[in-house]
Image (cartoon, rainbow, N blue to C red; front, side):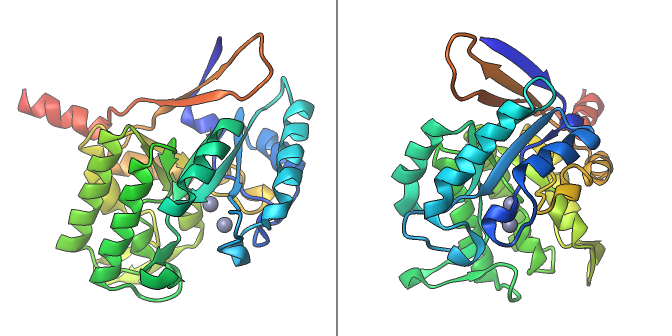
Length: 295
Ligand SMILES: [Zn+2]
Ligand SMILES: [Zn+2]
């Protein structure tokens, strides 16, 4: 097994394209911009279609899955030796898709998950971006997020603090939900993502001050006191965004006392096939500082 290590500065594992319908650009354009913007490891991670085409407004049709796969593999070959390209998906986890995602996991380099929609009773659901969310919604979000972590299918969870987009106070409930997510991630060895696309959405004014819609520094300060693995990603939906948020992600982490994990890509020499991707780390500057003080 040939293992290559990458530090966060040269990695982005959260990348969309024209395939999802709300992104733009060819996969090869992301690779080209990735090289320009200093990436060594680029993960393509289109929103994963499901066989019944649920969430079709923001996904490629299920029937396009093969074209996407082929496109990723062709680009990967074209850039071999210049840029490591991995093929994955961002999945919205619901238990009824577990076996589908499990099968898919065998065919790709990595999967990660996110919760974009609150899926409530009777398949009734609405996007976390549309309305202010209530305390009940906050708990519903957290429950779904924990199920994603516990599914055993995913390398990391994307924008775990997405609830902050539509829930503006930082209170007992957000602290409880954040701690649940962080502790569950540690217990299941799933990394959590600081998301560059939330930063691109600009600043919002709340009663607690001006902040990004997400990531929320209070969430990540809680994370920094634990051994949770933390990474950052661009969540690019156009080629020029492929690694443009890295500077902001680095200074955000520094402010919160977060130390980013590193990445290992393992490839077998003999067999053509999927790479194995792992995330290493989980020590944070602020927890080390705290340990030093208590010693
Ligand atoms: Zn998207
Ligand atoms: Zn995404």
